[in-house]
Amino acid sequence: MAEKSGSALLTDREQVAERLLEASAKHSYDPETELDWDAPLEPGKWFLPERMVSLYGTPIWDRLSEERRIELSRHEAASLASAGVWFEVILMQLLARHIYDMDPRSRHVSYALTEMADECRHSKMFARMVTKLGTPYYGPGGTTRFLGRVLKTTATTPGAFTATLLVEEILDRIQRQTFPDESVQPLVRGITRIHVVEEARHVRYAREELRRQMAACPAWERQFTRTVSGEASVVVARALVHPGVYAAVGLNVEESVKQARESEHRRETMRWSAEKLTAFLEEIGVIHSALDRAAWRRSGLLR
Image (cartoon, rainbow, N blue to C red):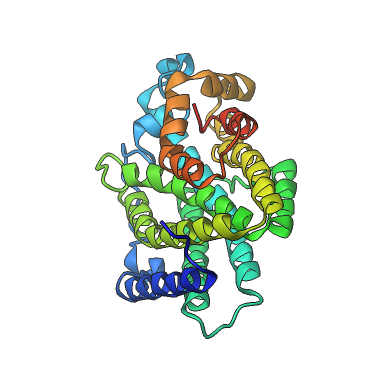
């Protein structure tokens, strides 16, 4: 099959953006009015599906009462939301860098701005969720925050879209298990439903652009993307569950972290959360060599 010219790739880019803009016009939500923030939380309801809690199936889990298990799910849901705010802020900066030199009249730029508006709403939604749950804000630690600052400052365009997918696709798979689960708090289900619907467009935009970028960028940029994305996978995977959630429910932090990382169920859950993403990244050459795969295995996202 003949390779597409640069102009054909750009035409495809505009067509994809146009379809995404049409979808955004039909299916965008304002969490401030769509969700009942004043409704009380329901006693006995989980905040994540039980099997998604990090200690599920471990010896510590077996010793916990159902009440403490649910309490741990509350703090882990807040940790995911806290990480979500941090991720979304980084993604907005990466998108702004991506379009900085582009013609603002293009549909591609128009959709990027639309996505940033979505991400602003999502950040506010996640922050309000943490407030509603009555937990601490589980923001990233100093080292993780520094690595995020390096990423958002130095990432090339394909690196930026790889990072975008790394965050969005993992959270998307977890949330697709959450919003239909009637054992979960209605507010949490409503939040995840909104996020899943709108993130589906973001994933399509990032996948299409990353495929174009990896086909067109110079060899050094492809290799840089492979190296950075492998390291980013480790940072992202470990930022999802803040160690402070264990202390919040009276557990030993060191032992809890150890059992979560050694749990075969947790490992399988993390690999499952990223399996569609890693297959796509292997297809387009972001995960390419044994060295690339070693970093992704270290993150726990690749077998």
